[in-house]
Amino acid sequence: ASKSHGMSIKYADFVDESYEPTAEDLVCTFRLVPGEGLTLAEAAGRVASESSNGTWAALDAPERVRELSAIAFDLAGDADGGEVQVAYPDALFDPGNMPQILSCIAGNILGMKAVDTIRLLDCEWPASLATSFLGPQYGPDVKTEILDAEGRPPTATVPKPKVGLNTEEHADVGYEAWMGGVDLLKDDENLTDQSFNRFDARLKRSLERRDEAQEATGEAKDYLVNITDETNVMLERVDEVAAQGGGFVMVDVVTAGWSAVQSVRERCEEQGLAIHAHRAMHAAFDRLPEHGVSMRVLAQVARIVGVDHIHTGTAGFGKLENEDTVGINAWLASDFHGVSPVLPVASGGLHPGIVEPLLDTTGTDVMVQAGGGIHGHPDGTRAGAKAFRQSIDAYVAGVPVGEYADDHPELAAALAEWGTE
Ligand SMILES: O=C(O)[C@@](O)(COP(=O)(O)O)[C@H](O)[C@H](O)COP(=O)(O)O
Ligand SMILES: [Mg+2]
Image (cartoon, rainbow, N blue to C red; front, top):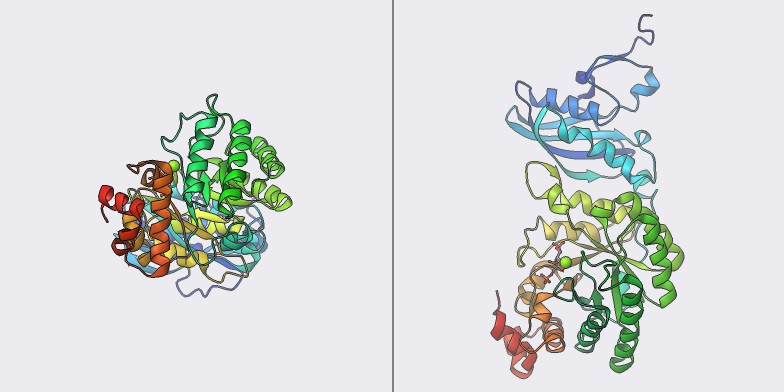
C-alpha cells in the first residue's frame, strides 16, 4: 500500500531557524557537538525529531501528528559544537507526568550517534506544564510555618559517622545538636532501615528527644528523616512520620525517581509534611559540562514536582564540586507561573569558618547543613552545634566571625580547628 497522507516527515523538517516559540512551548537549550560529518543544523534536526515524534526513516504522517513535532531554532555554533534551542508543543506531553516529559527532553537523544556529546542546559516551562503538578507545599515558609528560623538560615546536621550508630546513639546526637542550637536533625542518604538502626524505632526515639529539646530550648526543632525506599513503603512512612508528630520527610529524589517523588508529594499534601530533597547521584548527570543534564534542570523538575528544599551546593566553598549554585538558587526563588519557591540547601564540607563567605555569596535565604563541621568539633556535638549556630548568628548580626568568637568559646575552638577557609 503506498503512503497516503502526503505528509512525509524527515529530520530536516524539524529545523526552522526563524521559529518564534509560543507561550505553549516548552523550550529547551542544548549544548551539543554534532556527530562525525554532520552540521549543527543536521544534528539539531535529529535532536528535535528523536525527542518529539520523528525517527531516522522518512515517515508519512497526518497533519495533526506533525503538529506535535518539536522545532530546533536559534542555532549558535558550527560543526565543532554549539547551542541549540528546541521548542516542544505542550500537546506532546502528558501533563502531571514528569517521567514522560523527561523521556522526551532527556531521553534517547543523550545516546544518539548523531551527537558526540549533548547536554540539556536549561528549560523555559509553559504554565500548562508547570502548573499541572502540585509544586512545593511550603518552600521557604518552612522557616516560620514549621521552624522558628525567621530572618536567618535554618540549620541542619547529619550525624557522622554516616551510618553505624544505633538508634539510641543517633537520637542522642540529635538531642545534643538541637540543644546546641541546630534546628533540624537530618539522616544521611545511606541511612534507611538497616538492622542496627531501624526506621520506625529511629523515628520514634528521635522525635521523643526532639520534644525534650524543644521543651528545654523553647525553639521549634524537627527531623529530616530519610524515607527513601520502594514507593509503597515511602507512602506508609509519610503517614508514620505524620502520626508520630514529625514535620518533614527526606527523599533522595534522583535515586528514588520522579514518579516516586510525585507519589510522596501527593501523600505529603494530605499529611501536611514538608519534603527535603537530597540529590545523591546528581553528579552522574551534571558533572561533565559537555554532556548530560544540568543541575539547573534537575532543580526545575524538583520545584515543579513539589519538594520544599533541595541541595544546590556550596558555591565552591565546600568539599563537593558544584555547578552554578547562585544561578540555580536565584531560579528557585524566582516568579514561576505562581509555583511556590524552593529553599536551597548548602551542604558538604561546611564548618563555622566558611559560613561567612558562603552567605556573602548565596545570601541568607538558604538552609545550611553541617555534619563533619559539627560532630568533628574538638569539644563534641553540642559545642559543634553551638559554634555553627554562633557563626550564623554572627552573620545575621553583621559581626565578623573572628570578632564574634572573642566571647563565644565554642566558635573560637572551631575557628582554631578548621580556620576560615
Ligand atoms: O554525606 C555528605 O557528604 C553530606 O551528608 C554532607 O556531610 P558533611 O557536612 O559532613 O560534609 C551530604 O550528603 C552532602 O552535602 C550532599 O552533597 P550535596 O549537598 O552537594 O548534594
Ligand atoms: Mg550525606
